Image (cartoon, rainbow, N blue to C red; front, side):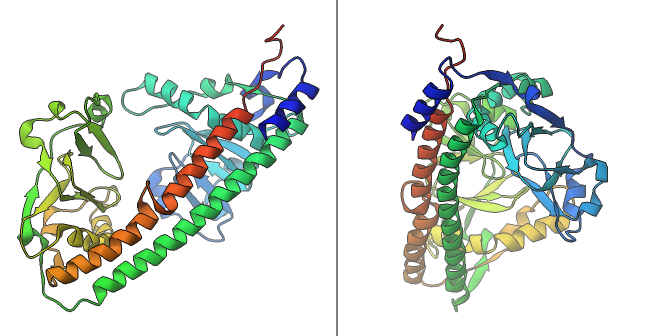
Amino acid sequence: MTNYIDRLVAELCPDGVEYRPLESLGKRNKGTAITASKMRSLEPGKKDLRIFAAGSTFVDTDSSNIPAKDILHGPAIIVKSRGYIGFEYYEKSFTHKNEMWSYTLDSNIVNQKFIYYYLLTQAYYLQELARSKSVKLPQLAVKDTDSLEVPVPPLEIQEAIVEILDKFTNLEAELEAELEARTLQYEYYRDSLFEALDCPHVPLGSLGVRNKGIAITASKMRTLEPGNKDVRIFAAGSTFVDTDSSFIPDKGILEGPAIIVKSRGHIGFEYYEGKFTHKNELWSYSLTSDLVEQKFIYYYLLTQAYHLHELARGKSVKLPQLAVKDTDELLVPVPSLEEQQRIVDILDRFDALTSSLSEGLPAELAVRRNQYEYYRDQLLSFPRKGENQ
């Protein structure tokens, strides 16, 4: 692959490849003034318009919900300019929140998808640039992408590279689809195992100790030095930091195994066996009762996550939030220890297939992604025009 592209570059660009500022290749688009709560309340209608927000958030809705002047048409490249910096390539009608921006490029000069693939190689640099501007929420400025120099080889080279990288992304998409199907299959089987139990149920809070966390801000978590990384600090969502226990007060360090309750935003649970702590708006359970296997209770709680998320959402239109009593009083099944262990053994195998980064489909997907990123970076690294003169 790289040899073929190298030969094309040597043949068509003997003096190197021209680099040009991104803003010189087309038009930069503004978005629409819309809040996150407004996005959530939109009726889907015929779903002919996608609205992008920060991170991986988007809503598909009816274009009649957005002013006609704010509707854009792909193909285009959307810049995720706040928080986790990144890019989206989209070919249909769309818009985005107005703190973001997008580019519609001149197809006579560049293949838009080629530029998108190149921008992905610059995402880490731009993330660090945005982080250096703010310790709170990383934020790019328009000029950071407008002035970013991108390679503009002949269209023949651009199209050849896009064809190669599309094949990689298609292979990755197939694996992701298979992983999604296996995950749904796993969740259905897991739920069926618990539904079939005929046994006593007791309140979760009666089975052990509920632990408090520590007072620590998100910005403080980001600044912690890793040290020997012997303690994990959990925050909301999927956020955690591995750091040195010397940064944590002794009374704040907890010993696993334990179940951490992600009680704000997207409600969920974590099972952890090492030293840990968590932000003090979260809580965790160390189950000391000899009636239960802790991992069995964790797997059961996963079946209750949707119910608890809806309960939390019902309490707040802004940020879903559980109360301690919501989990303390939650009834959990207590079959025989033999039955608990049997179910844990079954679900551990399923979990490895669908979640483990060292085995199963996630491991294969990680290998493919690393392979894709390696070749993408190789294919999109060009000698600049005049560099060797």
